[in-house]
Amino acid sequence: MDKTIEADPSHTEMDSQRLIHELQVYQIELEMQVEELRQARDEEAMAREMYADLYDFAPVGYVTLDRDGIIRNANLTGSVLLGVVRSQLIGQRLGVFVAVVSRPAFADFLEKVFTSPTKVACEVSLMKEGVPELFVQIEGVAVASGEECRIGLIDITEHKRAEEVLWMAKEATEAAILAKETAKALRLEKEISESLRREKEAAESATRAKDQFLANMSHELRTPMTGVLGMLQLALEEELAPTLRNYLGTAHSSANSLLQILNDILDMTKIEAGKIIIEEMPFSPRRCVTGAVDIITPEVRRKGLDIAISVAEEVPDKLVGDQMRLRQVLINLIANAVKFTNEGKVAVQVTAGGTNSDGKREYTFAVTDTGIGIPEDKKDLLFHVFSQVDASHTRTYGGTGLGLAICKELVELMGGMIDFDSKEGVGSTFYFTISLREAKSERNAPTAAEPLSPETFTAPKGERIPHLLLAEDDPTIQQILEMMLTKSNYSLDIAKDGKQAVEMWEQGEYDLVLMDVQMPLLSGFDVTLAIRERERERGGHTPIVAMTAHTGKEAEKKCIAAGMDHYISKPIDFNECLKLIGQIIGQKSSGNN
Image 1 (cartoon, helix red, strand yellow):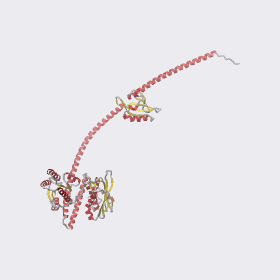
Image 2: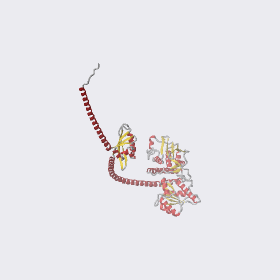
Image 3: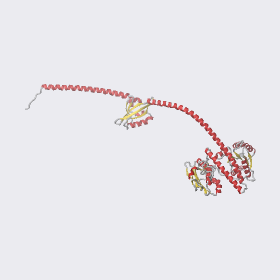
Image 4: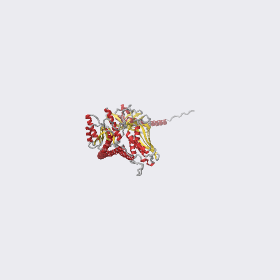
């Protein structure tokens, strides 16, 4: 049987009061929480407003960019820096506001900011209307998502201008210091220039004096040598006893040796003074070699040696170069080979090599002998001025020690190189290689130093005797030429100075004038000028052959430029002189006919 429990009214009332109290407590707590939430919301609103103010009015322009550099957000400072309203700024590329010159740097920055874990920075200039130049420093970092980056734009224009002002001030200061130093340097330079000018004038004066001295020495030495060689040549043409002919032949050979020494000294002086000019004229290499050998042949025969010439088939008949200097080198090398060879032979060989980029071909000239050779410890003495393998007072072979030095200088002036191979007691080979161009096959192309045509040495009998005028102040040369020309059936008048030469030419009719260049009263150049001026007035042309102690192409050019027709150097080779006269007279006679 269920028992029914009845509620206690007093108990129930107490529970109700307790619940009401708890609800009141909860309500109070809820109201407090609501108040706290409201206060928090207000504080948040205030914070947002404060942040917005700070963001918008910060001294740094803030811009948010995506990976393509498009502006997603910007503060007011940023829009002011860029010169565009913020609402119009969103969606544009920041790169369009960057000056063209700075765009490569900005593109590099944008690439790095999305790949670097740290802050990236660069400096660029912006294009802003009304502002000539605006410089900003950009600093940026990518957000965590990697899809955007936030950058700051810091205006550094004033800083840049300050730097520029400082740089200009520094430049001005340095310029002032430099100007002061320059003024001092200019004064010093002026003093140095003046000193150098005086030294240059003194050097030029000394050079002129040296050149004049050498010219005078050349004239004073070559003129008497002409007399010595001429008188010996005249004597050797007479009927002589064998002993006397031997004496005179030895004297003639010695005179030629003395002349070679003189030529070497003058040539070396010209080389050192830079007076040697290399000519470029067509010539025959075969004639050049045989001509050099012919000069040495008498000594070759005297010593009982054999001499051979070998020119390769591929060597052309005509080359372009300085035949005179090439021949000089060959004569020197062949003469040395003969001098140092007591038995056996001397061989001269010419071969052709490859072609250079400038179209010239290399040609090697070699002179080989079976002579005494050169000791190994003496080889370094060769090609030096005044140095000889045997320089002792008891040496067997003479010489000045200039020959090979001159050869080396001449070969190098021609753009080549010279060397040698030698073994003591076996013999030596001296060889040099130069680059030459083959001459064009033109009929009228001028040829350097072509041998004279085989004219007779005497005027033809039964015809009018050619009338010559000799302008020469040296009595010995007068005597020699008078004897030789008279013997060769020429009529000769002699003028002893330049003034007399002009007067005699005006009064007579001459087929040819032999003109000494250095004479009293009027030089050979002045006489030639006077003759040519009178010929322009009255017509006609008298061939003039210059005779000068000055040698080389420069002297020849000077004579030709002065109006002379031909040139022979002293000491005069009288056989060649007579041959030249015969050729000129023959050509003149043919022209008149």
